Length: 145
Image 1 (tube, rainbow, N blue to C red):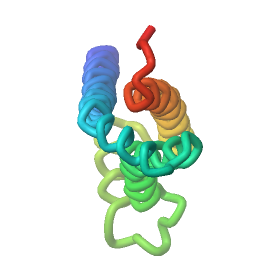
Image 2 (spheres, rainbow, N blue to C red):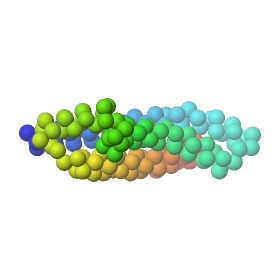
Image 3 (cartoon, rainbow, N blue to C red):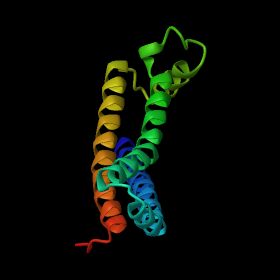
Image 4 (cartoon, helix red, strand yellow):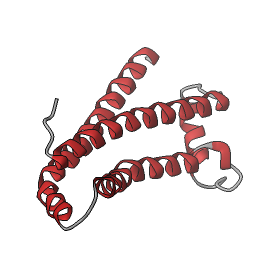
């Protein structure tokens, strides 16, 4: 039972993370093709390449890391770190669900939650850097490798 649930959780988690990252990546790349002409016009009227890069990074940082920030906030309110503030709300439900499966180690739950969030953030950062590079190449009309 535990092995099957672990496999199902890992498989679905990986599937959803990949789907989320690919959707955001391709959405930003398609916007890059749409914005390329606008950035060319802005360059002609005096916008420098550094200003264009700052604009691109600002846009991509918002699109990529705003969901990550909200995911962290959701985890913070579901985690037992602020248990006293949310005694009536989220954590007792998680604690009961885990206790139904004889999982009562709260420290392990916190450690797994933090590790998963860090791994997700690192993966998200890598995809952000890749997207920023490709977006910059599209806007600058360089050849893509």
